[in-house]
Picture 1 (spheres, rainbow, N blue to C red):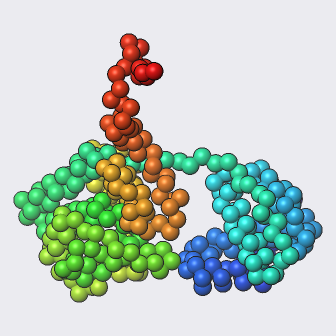
Picture 2 (picture 1 turned 90 degrees about the vertical axis):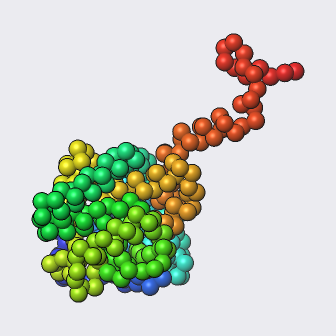
Picture 3 (picture 1 turned 135 degrees about the vertical axis):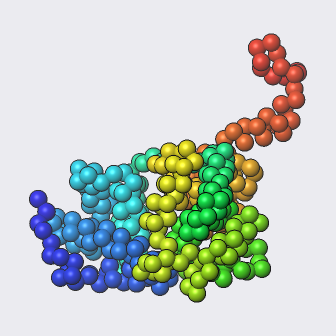
Length: 328
């Protein structure tokens, strides 16, 4: 049984881990949460090596396989085990590339099989219902002469229009500057993960929603969605809570709707209507196309119809059993 290791504050980070994390931060712009996750994974790995009496310089592929095999009995799901193996692979590859190890024992390893869950997606009709309900709530609040309620309803409509029009991450959306609503440009410059900047086009509906929200909520705050919070702007939790209430008002299941689900809807609906996968990758701010490829399930029907409508052999006459007759 693994002995209890001292609390993190009392442990000294091994120099190999410290060097690897420094590289991730400096060269790849890894976020603080990412670095902490990698630190925890490598700390667990080093703990395993210590328990087994293994020296880092003498690790072989068989030792890594034994470590990976030990993860499932400890309760790690395949996705978590695969992520941990990916971290350890990157670590050993770094040591080898920097001349800190004579070989890379992780090279022969293959990751545990894992299914990739399809993202939850709202239909176009469901998104339309969500937006229509938000507009109706504004009208109802104005008619009832409830200015506070009208401001909150206008803010929700602005959040919904922006999120569905741009596919922003919720962290990017809630931290938009107030100047975004008054720009004459038809796009936003967004700083995403790793400090990477990207251009995100704005629809006229989204621009109009921002202008109306700005007019309804005069403020000296620098944020488009100011709030009484530590950050000074709307929090993820508050937006998620209000979005659940908006979903229920629209007759949708609250557990089916979240800020991330609307981001999924943005990507899936674009692809379904013919958008290029690489363009969607850029709009979402994904560093790797493999992250965007989870949305390709929505392309099946469109690809089938394209082959049916555009393939030259589809014009050939069919036999009585539906098979294409091929002339000798």
